[in-house]
Image 1 (tube, rainbow, N blue to C red):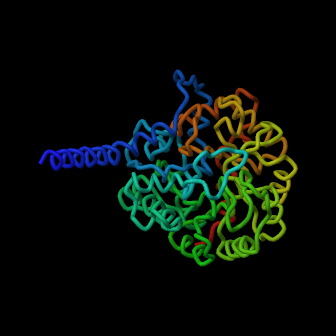
Image 2: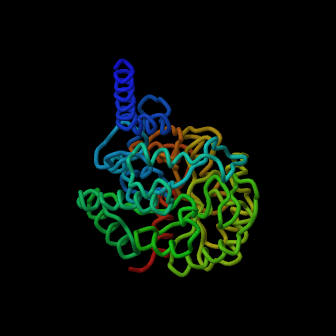
Amino acid sequence: MKLKRTIRYALIVIILLVILVLTFGPGYLDKSQNKVLPHSPFNISQQAIELHQSLQIGDLHADTSLWKRDLLEKIENGHVDIPRLSEGNVAVQMFTAVTKVPAGINYEKNSTEARDLVQLIAILERWPVNSWSSLTQRALHQVSNIRSLEKEAPEKFKFILSAKDLATHLGKRATGSSIVGGMMGTEGSHALDGDLENIKVLFDAGYRMMSLHHFFDNKLGGSLHGESTAGLTEFGKQAVLKMNQLEVMIDVSHSSEAVVEDVLAITSRPLIVSHTGIRGHCDLKRNIHDPLMQKIAKSGGLIGVGYWEGAVCEATPKNIVAAIRYAIDLLGEDHVALGSDFDGATTTPFDTSELAILTEEMLVAGFTEIEIRKVMGANMMRYFAENLPAG
């Protein structure tokens, strides 16, 4: 009898622990991984405030869909939600679906066999059971959550699928609407689960940008942070051509330099590096070398400068602007954009509601108004207008 009572008590304790982990675990993970450096309120000049409010602002990369949040509500966790996007005057946010992250993640070398941390998140956040083992299902779950925002609050959020959608959305904002536009991209094409047909599956679900790699090598080829440093495989070449055919924008963030060279040799469309630094400004393994960045830009590509120390070495507004200045001088003012990597397990000096500090620092640094408008969003809007399906 005593043994049975002990077992019953142990089972109750285990059940309570499971309930506690499932209830509080997702919020703890989010809060612990996505931080803003403590700072006093930024001092923004009236000139910067007025200019900032007149900009069409866009961001090429935020991993917000990974985390369990009500994005229609302003919260304290992380960097992005719809109210904070509106406060920051963001017109279009590209959300990027993280579907696999290796344990022990680093910029130098990661194994494809390392334990998958996103599986743990999927279980803790109670994603559909089929997503626990399928990376494609994880991507489908995340895009479904983002698209549902439009159904819940069409006056606050518009999901953009085409150049026509983008033009209509920007037209509304030009008349005074504060509606936020959103798009969806993948953080690595391991999300295809090794099946080329899943490019069309994800496209049909709403994906309009696909990156080829994240922190590890995959069936398409080598990662910048993998073990092989290899170029595109035959599967990778077929995937690039299929993406071209469907007018999917290709993101080579995290791809090995050999992969980038191979993609440039076969693609018919300009590339994106959605979140990065510039190697000549910040000499870290996370960043592609300058000559290859120049090739991407020369082919019509777009480079999004990030806000965390792995990209820019020192995560301050002033230094982020210094990285942007370096990028403009290296690549030209038409090829530089914002690529925050908000909510990508990063620590940044501000969240998306505080973006006016970049406008302020650009003015202080002597940027022209045309340069500021282009970097803050005009380049991104032009690139999307030219490379999204017409609709």
